[in-house]
Image 1 (tube, rainbow, N blue to C red):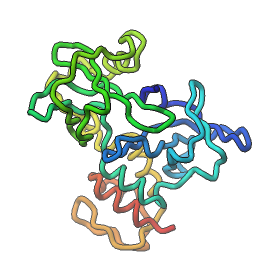
Image 2 (image 1 turned 180 degrees about the vertical axis):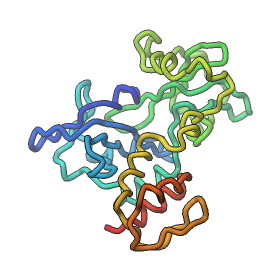
Image 3 (image 1 turned 180 degrees about the horizontal axis):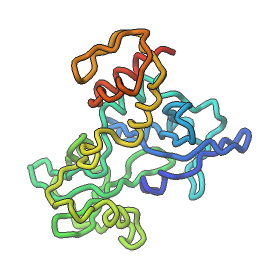
Length: 253
């Protein structure tokens, strides 16, 4: 079993030639399957654009590296409809509130535990309002939503399987909470303040100098016509995730 924080930041190594292909920057999850579908690469140059690797193409996830058979399995997000759809859904699980099907709010997800061999979510570690660190197993999870994790009746008080002092959940609890953030701050507050997450900002940078295949209506009401080169001024008028994904889907190849 591995937590998301144990996977993010791993080196990506190609077995065919021993090449270091970059780092795992983020995980792309499927709400329907409760599974890890893609990993997003963090590469040194934005020139390459946003790249993903499908979980099916991953050979192994170890303590030092995530291994793949060859560089050929690395895909461009702009050319992968499945990755675009999942990114558009925006299901992160971490930082979502935990709600029982009877309507009881019991905490907030701090960490996700994966069966790294099957690519399935095995459990979610959450923090209760009184500060306890507990665990809800995957078979008790009904829905992975963008804002809420819906679970069966309140699970038994299962302590988080990783001690807080050693766990990614513990580290996340101390590092993610700012002194200014109130207890009622909703999930995704940091992302709302910045507009886009790091991956999405990198994707915006990738648009510079590119053109689209059809006219796109920007978030300020103006239209970016097909065949016209993207400029920094145009980038300022992209503020919604829907527009970002629409442009990604219609970039000229």
